[in-house]
Picture 1 (cartoon, helix red, strand yellow):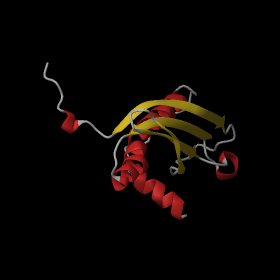
Picture 2 (picture 1 turned 90 degrees about the vertical axis):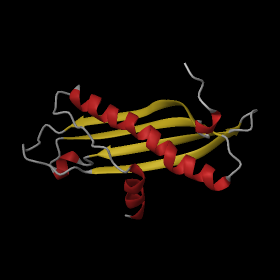
Picture 3 (picture 1 turned 30 degrees about the vertical axis):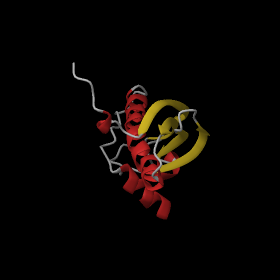
Picture 4 (picture 1 turned 120 degrees about the horizontal axis):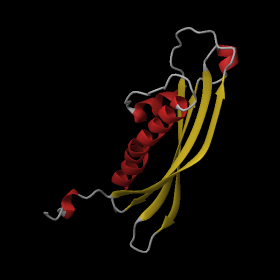
Length: 146
C-alpha cells in the first residue's frame, strides 16, 4: 500500500463526538395529515486548549430541534438533539483556521446528527425521519438571521 502524501492531509482533525442530550416526545393527539418539515439548528464553537504539538483543540456543538411544540402545531412528535464534536486544528493561517472550525467541522459533524434523527424516529415506532443532505452552513446562517 502506498503511503499518503502529507500534502493531502487536512489541517483539521476530527477526534471524537459525544451525544449530550436527546429529548423525544410523541404527540398522541396528532391528526394524521401531511406535515411540512420544521427544523431549527444552532451551533456553538469553543476553544478548548492549545496542544503540545502546536495544534488547538475546539469543541463544536450542534443542536437540532424538530417539530417544536407538537401539540399546538399538530406535529407528530418533537425531537431535540445536541451533540458535541472535538477537533484539532494546526495552521498558522487565521483565515484558514476560521474556515476549518466554522464550516468544515460543522459539515463533518452534521451526518452524525442526521443519523441519530433517523435512528431515534425509526426506533420510536413512527415513520423514520430521514433528513436529506443539506448545505448545513447555509441553513445555520438562515436560522441565525431569523
